[in-house]
Length: 78
Image (tube, rainbow, N blue to C red):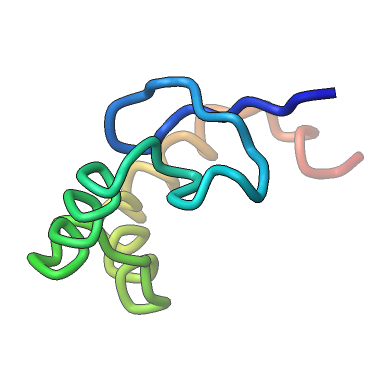
């Protein structure tokens, strides 16, 4: 069975085998484009700080309290 994956850069189908020397990329060009994106920090792994910052921006305590106040009283008792 031949496994195919999509090139992360151009989405071209790539056969996943030891013969595909640039896998998961389809070519050296796509591999270098991806490397350049990492070098320019266009791609990066999220850190715990990034996740915490995003969460604190997304959560508004007053909104949560308002939503909880709208719930039926027995909502939390079960």
